[in-house]
Structures are given as C-alpha cells and as structure tokens.
Image (cartoon, rainbow, N blue to C red; front, side):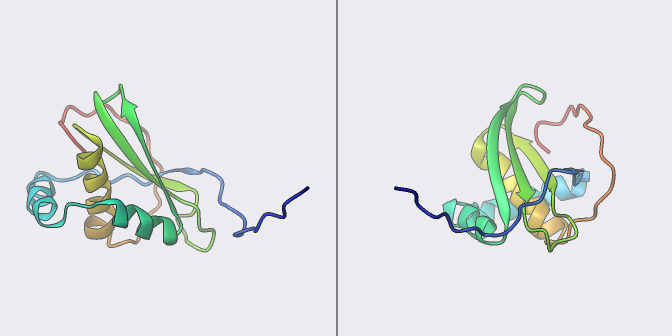
Length: 124
C-alpha cells in the first residue's frame, strides 16, 4: 500500500558558503557568550523549524569537529548557503555556529564568494 508523503515545499540547492571569520575580540566575546548560553538540542530544533539543516562531522582539515548550518528555505536571500564552524568537540562547534548565526550576523547572512582556507586557530 502506497503512502502519500506530505511535501514541505521545494528545498534550495547548495550554492556556497557564508563566511564569518571571527576577529580576536569576537573570539574572546564567544567565550563569555558561550558560558552564558550553552546551546542544546532545543536550539537545533529551533533552527530546524526556521528552515536550517544542522549537521556535524569530524573535520580532518582542522583536526576537530565541524558543524554546518544549511539554509533550506527558498524565501531567504541566503537559501542554499552554508555557515560552518569547528571546535574541539561537537558542542563547541555547535556553540560557535550559533554564535556566528545569532550574534555576529544577527540571523542575516551576507552572501559573498568564499574559498576554504586553512586556519591555524583552534576553533572558528
């Protein structure tokens, strides 16, 4: 018996990255923000409800865990773009991507060409 699937609308195709490189001052401010906020599963649920896909993977490039937000909502100017971060573990990487999304970019992504570059910082 076939089951009809509910469609949530057309998803955006991947287009590129939204790059945010933290300044030294923002990196210090992240520690304060992260100590007060500690993003958890409820944050993942809120991002999913807002049209973002959240993913994690081990990042050989930066030798840590990478977290990505991918905007799937076609109505947003940054639909199809990803915002990434990395850290020593999944929690720090997710905290960093939330900090970039909510604090640095104020949930408004500027779309610019981005080329991946090796960073020698411990997170980003």
